[in-house]
Image 1 (cartoon, rainbow, N blue to C red):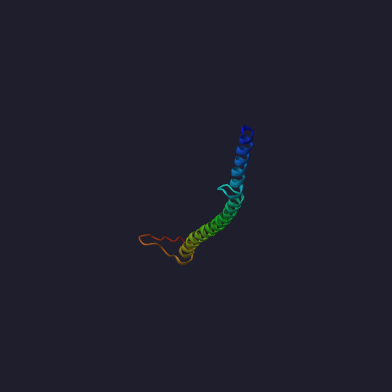
Image 2 (cartoon, rainbow, N blue to C red):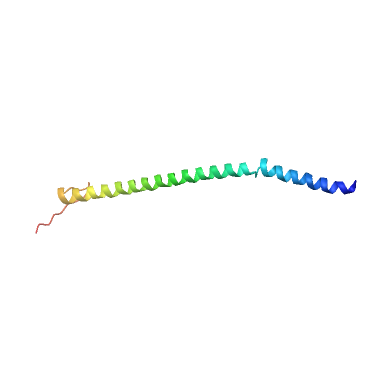
Length: 91
């Protein structure tokens, strides 16, 4: 009887470990699903990063564009801000 307990116990442990591999929390299907979700999230992050960079470039262009409009208005049209004195020197 003692000769059969050890092999039966080892077989039972092998069955438990094997079951965990196929249906447990760290199973192959679970790992594949997590890898698929990770790939989706990585793609979403890359798209969000590209959107952020595009928006940052738009903000920069708008800021520089407004500064350029103000500079042109000052040079070509002689415009001034409130409480500012404009002095023009003719050559």
